[in-house]
Image (cartoon, rainbow over all chains, first blue to last red):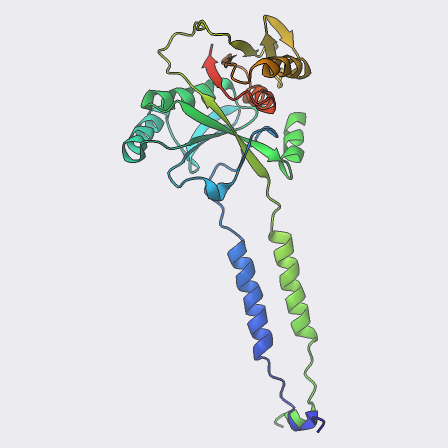
Length: 152
Length: 136
C-alpha cells in the first residue's frame, strides 16, 4: 500500500504558506507600537523603585517628559513641547474628570532641577501633590548610552 | 515548450527556506531588548507653603551642585557633605528605628536630576517612602 509519489507530483504548498503567514502575524502583533515620547531622554538608575509595568498604568495617567535640547531643558508631552501653564490646565481638566490620576515624570538624568521643579509646581498648582519619577530598574540599553554622553 | 510537472516531481525548497530564514533574521535583529523601568513616588507640597521644617522629626537632605561642572551633584546631610555610601549608611540607621520618618529633600535649582533620583533610590532601598521634595 506504499504511496507512489510519481502519481501525485504537485506538492501542496498551502500549509507552509499558512505557517509563514502565522509567523509574520505573530511577530507583527508582538512588536508593540511604541508610545510617542521624547526618545533622547536617558533615565537614571533606580533599582530599588517600584517596578513599572506599562500595561498596568491606568489609561488616565499623565506622563511629562523633560529632555535636553542643546543644553536646555525641553518639557514635552507625547513629544510635543508644552509650557508649565499648559500642564496645569491639563492636570486640572483631568482632575475634574477622574478625581485622581498618576503623574509620571520622565526626566533626563542630566537635566537641571529647575525644569523638574517647574513641572512639579505646575502639577501642585492644579492640586496634584503626588508625583512619580521614572527610573531604570533593570538596565539593558541605557547604561551604554549614558556613559557615551558622560564622555562628551 | 510547456513544462511538464510530472517530469520534475520534487519541488525545490531552497528558496523558500532562504526566505523564511531571512524573515527570522530580520525580526530577531529588529526586536529591541527593552529596559525595565521603575517609579519613585514623591510628595510635592504647594509652592506657597512655607519651606520651614515641621515639628516632627524629619531628615533633611540638601542637594546642590557645588562645583559648576560636577555632573553627579552634591549631597548634604546634617550640614555635612556626604557620599552616596555615607547617606546609605545614615538612612539605614534611620529606617531601623522608624520607616515612617518623613524625609525632606531640598534641591538647588542647578542640581542635576540624577542626584535627586539617586537619593530617592536610596530612600526606597530602606523602605522610607514618605519623601517630600522642595526646591531651594
